[in-house]
Image (cartoon, rainbow, N blue to C red; front, side, top):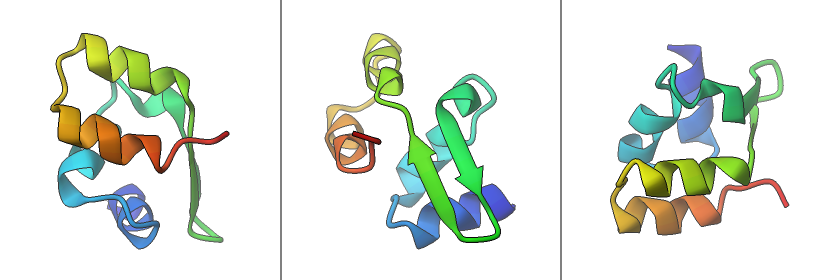
Length: 67
């Protein structure tokens, strides 16, 4: 999957990648597959927190969010 590869190339863990490629969260992730870039909206953090995503993954996510 090119989206999984792009996230992994950008330093996102396998566990967090599995969550971010889910249809439920894809609206918050923008991919530039040609340049292997990904932007993750800050809004996803609260949504994942409400969905009881592991706190360690939420901490990791904070390093990948667009500021």
